[in-house]
Image 1 (cartoon, helix red, strand yellow):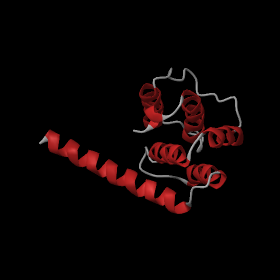
Image 2 (cartoon, rainbow, N blue to C red):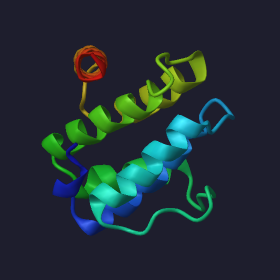
Image 3 (tube, rainbow, N blue to C red):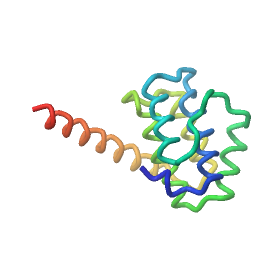
Image 4 (cartoon, rainbow, N blue to C red):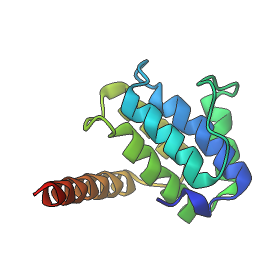
Length: 135
């Protein structure tokens, strides 16, 4: 949704972050893989050919924080939440991953909850539109 607004370095770091997020529960599932491919398309960068990240999570987060505004970080959180909710649930390991990101930024738990609610509402709107179109 908002990834095209990021600078190239942010996009590359976001892709690494998203890959690690998708692997947070040791399971990279079909929907998450599709979303990673879609993220690459949206950002205008090459889609990952492997899902190996050669940086530590803390390094990726610190690099993103150093080059990102609060607005950029909120965009990143929205996309991370959408990815982590791709299977309609956020398990304990995925939640822990998200909290690591939030803790390192100046974002709040309220920001995360607002993003979660908004993504869930958006998913409901998409589901309603799909039902409408099929009628």
